Image (cartoon, rainbow, N blue to C red; front, side, top):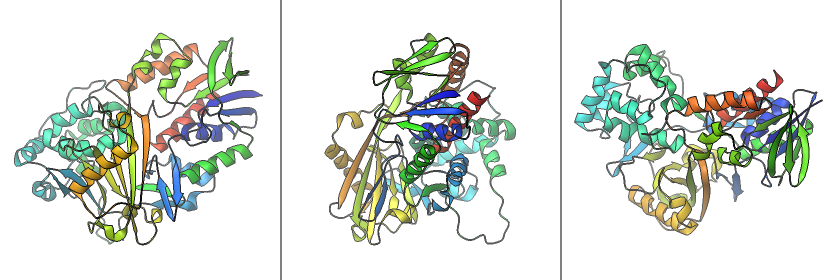
Length: 456
């Protein structure tokens, strides 16, 4: 019988255990350093609230997570977000994202020409995208450099960057295009213009009423933690041996097998799937080709949840929150009006806000305590919104070094490391958010790919 160890019981590790458990001839041990499963996923329930302290949801168009939820019997518990206008805080006010804009790329002339997010000169510069030839083919370029060339500074910094930066928490002028949004380059090549491409690929209207627009994100009615709990339960029922408070101290190669030392004990495995953050690797490997991971950054972020009575929050805007232009002098980078976005999250008569703090290069999360972070967030929110009185409660969640930075050249370096591992450590798979995608469905996909490679 083949023996496989999985290190890390976050979404990647739990998913890998599930896909491995479909094969009867494999013994699976799942090791987790902490005393719980889920990694960054953490749902807090209190007084009728369902509050996400880590990731909030996932993109519905990335179907891996939905497929897994259906397989473990949770398909009926999925809920879609409420929809509304997206807003950007720029020029010291909230402005609606122009209708039809796709990740900040305009697809409709009228709304773009009338938006106050972009200056007249910025609109003219963006219009030149229709006539610019694609840049020569390259291996990678920064997201900032790519969009500056196509659409100019104004559109990048007041529309595109606020929408994208919250996903990767990396300086947009260092963020790898080919590791994050390669389809923009593909669109440029195919259509000769980002705007032409966005218009061509925009879903066509049939002219018939289709009812209310559906939200783009999915959650579970009892929170993401309920998915983690069910996935762990199914894994355990299938014979996966989940061991918590189990720190993997060393990994040693011996012939075609590997010896793990965990809490002072040793055990031999045929294969290992490692799903931990990349900065853990240096404990187990000193090889030169892994040098990239030793210097790869990870941004620290924090969320500040505030619960109010509904009448304390004067907010009649048809929207679910806003993101902040980096031209604004704020500590927060975004705020979700959670009770508007997720109806199941908040009791009747209450309002729930979730502000995000932490930019690449700042040290607020490391240097400020919880009370100071709450004060910074409230100071910014009071500039942007009309809030009366103190919240009923606040919850600060610090996620230190939680957002891996995909800088220019990231994909080619990861590809090289993967090739090196296949040659020198053929039984080990490195995977997870530090590699090919930070979203929850991306991690599920990577787990499935790692299992497939082991089975083959």
